[in-house]
Length: 459
Ligand SMILES: [Fe+2]
Image (cartoon, rainbow, N blue to C red; front, side):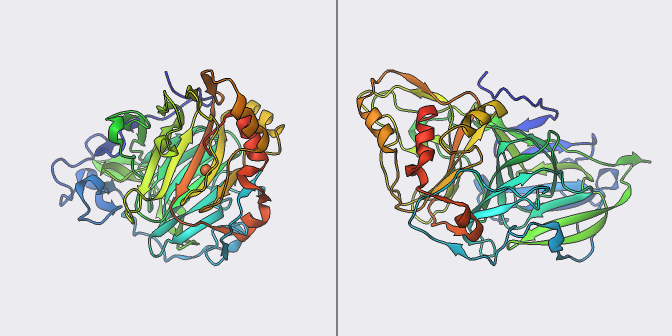
């Protein structure tokens, strides 16, 4: 089967199908039938709705979910700014100056702050736009060595989080159910959905694309037809999880103190509540988190000559509608695949693009990671950022080899190796710490030299 050989076994069950109307009951009979907001829902639950789009958004884009829970989520204290002692100095700063540069940027290995959790380890690399204006996006890293503190839950009012693990496993308990997200899987947590992240197998690190504007969707397939790339059925949605009980036909849960952390306009706030946030007995709708195994991606390529554009490798997209075909961001991947083009320069040709390109690598085993650490200065937790109209391409040695190589069919990439690319129409400003941490040369430098032997990816 074309699925990733995960070293960490799955432990949850899921619903399947991107964008579908789903429903799930942790308690049989908890979902009202035919009515969304009954006077008295089953088990004396309360009704709450979370909307991800305007009420009048077209059906194909309308995202709303009905929740049936013990305590409405408004049952909490006032929010106050999160104490700085709980977060690393560079986390999520919206005041930091962001820098535009015409230089290609490369990070061989992002610096890691020890003893951080999911919230405190998030550091912003680059940003364009504003969450308050619901415009643009940001790229971040996370590098957590600890689970979130007990009875603490997090959400972002700013953005959908596209989480791309580079290594390690995230056990994500969302309000709507559980997701186990391993290396070579990605997940999306929509804005406003509350969740708690623990680390069942030690440290975990990776990348986050924050989407301030709209939501992710599957790309249109055009002449490709009705399947391939990321297939609809391979997206997995959690099933309802309820931390309570039924007593005399009434749903209840223990009173206990929880801390709710919320990100708003890049700043962190917290409040307390006297009940578990996992008190949703059932839900139905279209607004939910999901995950996807990148090993299930059905790659499309040329079987004659030339390279298709890298848009052929798009997993998820967030259209901007500014001009036809433009996107706030496209998330594309380059998994192991065959190259068979005849008479063609096989590596990526030299190019300058109107969009900006942020690239990184997911490596699925520590063994392969160690191989990469012996490479030409490119660590697994690295990335490149080539801004608008920044020239990039292969190094001289790769270029010369490519011009004279025998063009046999060849498999490129390694098992468990996936390169990803986040392409945005927007110019990405780089944060101060990220600019300081970046090397020179971008993908003209050692990164492309290292990549060309293993991957020949389309950067
Ligand atoms: Fe490129």
